[in-house]
Length: 204
Image (cartoon, rainbow, N blue to C red; front, side, top):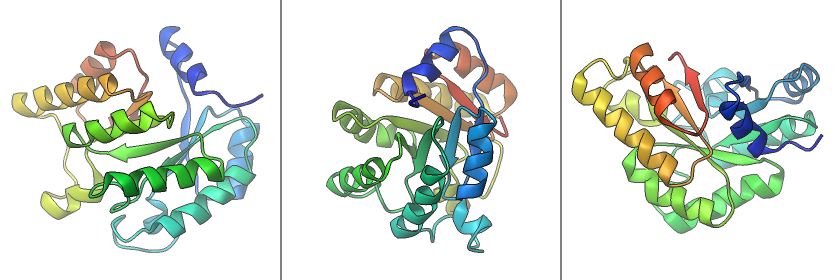
């Protein structure tokens, strides 16, 4: 079976659960692939889990490519999504295109990008050029540690409204899915119901 992102969208329409596992290596990828996992996310958390970095900020494109290669080699039936590391997409749209293309040419099926309305133009451009994008709102580990630390998102009315607006704009930009990290259950449920694309919870 050739992994297909549209299958995930069909599962959303049918209200079927989608299984997503974070993987950094060949062995984990093989186990998940044989177990019928839908999606493998090669997270930049690999820097902390596998390399001992204090945060995800230090992770490089080169390191992410190595982790992605191992996961790709272990999978035949699973959608593989590469986490775009800090600094690989935020400051230069042309550089973001080149880095996203590197992941796709390597064998990943999509890329994940953290951010709210500020990254909507980039998501729109990437999807226009045929690169599938998963959005990521709520707690954003690449920048949250610099500003406020790891805190639950959506606890106030203003925060909940902002998250909902971000989700809508990211879907409109063409993202095929959206990660909600450390968002309150009520807000996460409201966002999930309002979107036509699948939402994936991390602590939400």
